Amino acid sequence: MSSDIVPMKTREFQNHHFDSTIWNDFSFRGDDIIISSYAKSGTTWTQQICAQLVFGANNDKKVAEISPWVDLRVPPKEVKLPAIEAQDHRRIMKTHLPIDALVFSKKAKYIYIGRDGRDVVFSFFHHHTHANETWYHAMNDTPSRVGPPIEPPTGDVVQYFNDWLDKDGYPMWPFWESIRGWWNVRNLPNVLFLHFEAMKRDMAKEIRRVAAFIGTEINEDEWDDILHHCSFEYMKENAADAAPLGGIFWDGGAQTFVNKGVNGRWRDVLSAEDVAKYESVVSQELPADCAHWLATGEMR
Image (tube, rainbow, N blue to C red; front, top):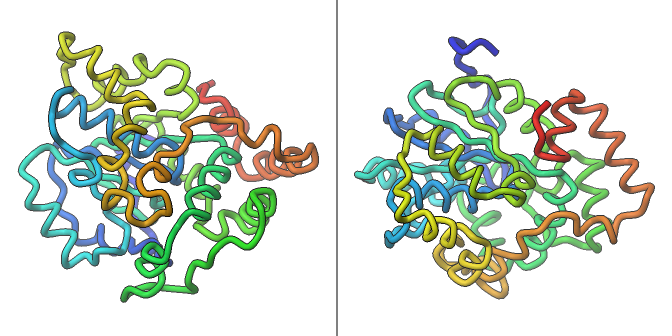
């Protein structure tokens, strides 16, 4: 996509989680940072990285409080938008919308994070199976839900994986359109692509890429502290700072929300037939270079 073309919103996307109309009334600032992913791909990790770079390593900012999920339909836009507008610091926000359901601005910096779909599903299964009644009430019983409610999982992780693959993201939301749409805008000057696997391989390198992209100079005296505060160990120990409302939506609390932070758990669980089925769907849904990036984090 040419650097002078701005992606256009062509539809609304609403379900038990989403209300894309919130972006229609959003007022952008020139230094906004918007972190995007399908979900369960390192979003909270990237929010933490951006907060460390923007506010410094020894700040008291909690990403769960300062970095809202804009298109989550709770709280409603009448509450959410004034709260975001009232933030007097550089704003760090997140979205899980596909690009064609998002109001896109040349003013903002967009960071998109990808992860192998199999790892995404295994993380979502943990997230979903530990959701409690407070979570189901927020997703299903609050006003403005569009479409059917989300129900508790009924099978094991293999069944969950096959349902997700057969029904494109069920019971959450479509996966492939998110990857394709953002892949198509990867070369825009205000878009940066990250990948969970690359962040695991060399977190320091990826943090410096983020810093350069958002235009934040790293205080080298704080570098070791930044790395420490962005480590999985630190985030697990301080999970209540990252989990929405301190983790009240999950049995086990915030420690459940920040789970294992690893890839490849599917390798010892999925059968060869399951893996082949996934790879066949990938080849149908994504161009080869995108499929390679999604599986490995490597750009060709």
